Length: 188
Image (spheres, rainbow, N blue to C red):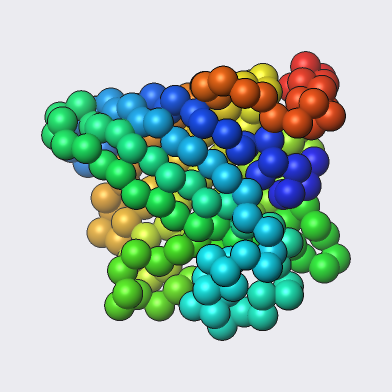
């Protein structure tokens, strides 16, 4: 599987349930959200804009995603909504890995590209780090309509957060060829 196939399998509307554990505080909380994932062509204006933010030529990109969410966290009961754009830039020598550009919300931060790798089992690992934090996230499909994510976020000063998210596709299915491919990789 490559990044484009993983992104395609991820498209659709998902229900997400997340459990977050704050290690320093020894506290957990739960949240849920509805998430819509759409693919963006390499020449889409939002992909071009993100590439400009990072100072990267848009012709080196392969694919983009737009992720939109709307949800709540258990303790706050405040709605969290927003969207983000992700753009993949595969390594020329190894398309199973490359750079991942993420939309930067804080305009004062210098954009730092993350890295991605598609493992032999079809799981996607994303690593993002800057001077204040490091995030490592692993995403995989348990079945074509069930996706899992684990994340570890370490901030400078030793503050760490871990999370586990299960995502269930709501209606619709990924393209048929991709579904059978994903199902066969999950069962093997």
